[in-house]
Image 1 (cartoon, helix red, strand yellow):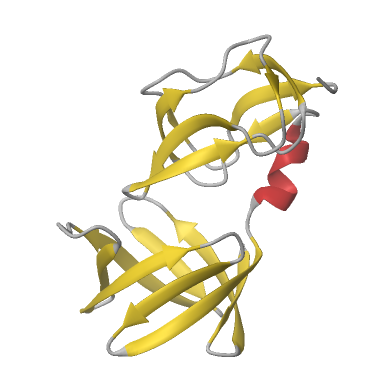
Image 2 (tube, one colour; image 1 turned 90 degrees about the horizontal axis):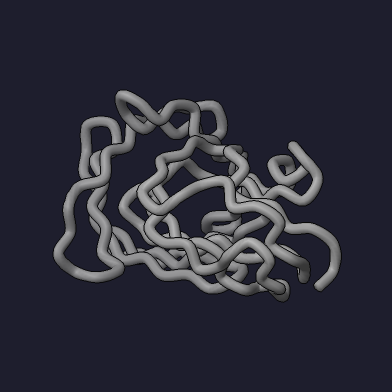
Length: 162
């Protein structure tokens, strides 16, 4: 579940189903979402229920910026899945979204600092880096390149301080 602010209004958004179609619930109303191909970086096309939405998207650490239908939106990231997922097993870094591992950027025994990129994953046609949430030592890598995973799957485990 994520709590987002769009045009000054707070909304509770959650992915309620991934397959056979992506279904997103926004404030209790469900929408079927189907990503459509785009040949322009940062441009998206989504089939949402019976209509199609086209726009541009970029983000920074705290905000997602959207341009759709001639309007600009800044969506503040209040909380994204990670708060409840990391505690499944102490030290595990878990997947926030389902996806596939594109590449592994660390090895067991590596010392890492908070913010280091440990894995590169693909989720919903986007590349999503997985960062170290703290300094530590890579104790275990629980997935391989090409591995598919679901939300909440432990991807790797960090132990102690480096």
